[in-house]
Picture 1 (cartoon, rainbow, N blue to C red):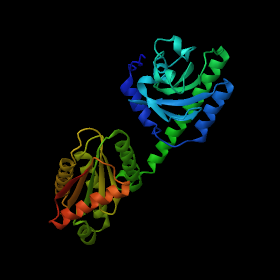
Picture 2 (picture 1 turned 90 degrees about the vertical axis):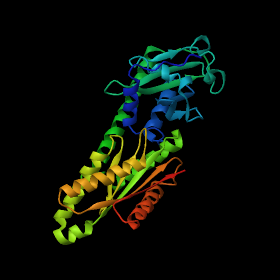
Picture 3 (picture 1 turned 60 degrees about the horizontal axis):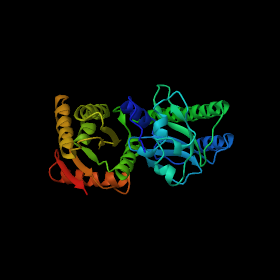
Length: 332
């Protein structure tokens, strides 16, 4: 078996794939219809819409296959994306040195024939392929190749519509007052972080922030001043955090930060948040500080709400200990 080499634009390709937010999602009729139509039009027992991430090929839709994913190194579609503008045809996998000892050939589903039309987005990134498979050698005509390409274009258009809907939803996930993510957006991203931890073992962190003295500002200086405090906290959070982190407002004077990516240090991030909030609000003439709870998750919490509750309890520990400080734990 000869695994496909990485495309020259692999980093950009993976970033493009991530932008569709489609991996590990549930079945959708629009994609299911495409693979069924491909199988029927080309008279094939197997068809799939395959997306290639850094370690696997994952099937967004499939017919004739039991598996939901396979390792990338044995993926035929990983070869198909190397030439985004042509359909990859393998008339007989047993006669092709790239695939002759591939476990997908020697074992189930016992691939002999393969044709894959790359899924190419408007920016030119090949995300995967629409493929058809048979368990015996064969050929397909030029008109059948064209039909497969057109169906692949339809699948890509469907993915584009999905991404556009995601962008529209994102506009509804901003808290308009401080200009950062709202509670719903934070919950959604925490759920995704939990899914990544479960799938890839990628840890994440949460920082929970409650302001000290905010009610006094509202009572003594009015709600306009209180709104200004919230805006200044958002500025402090953006300044204190990395590009990979997400800050949002949970409601009232409570904020949270999702720490993702590499080199997570929840305690250090929480201390930066506390210090930046104190400094920023002091410079603006507000006697407001922050009590902060921080937790690193290396095993999966039951849900985003459970994760937030864990960090919330740590925040109250900091508040009971005198306010304007950090309490931190690792959730093993």
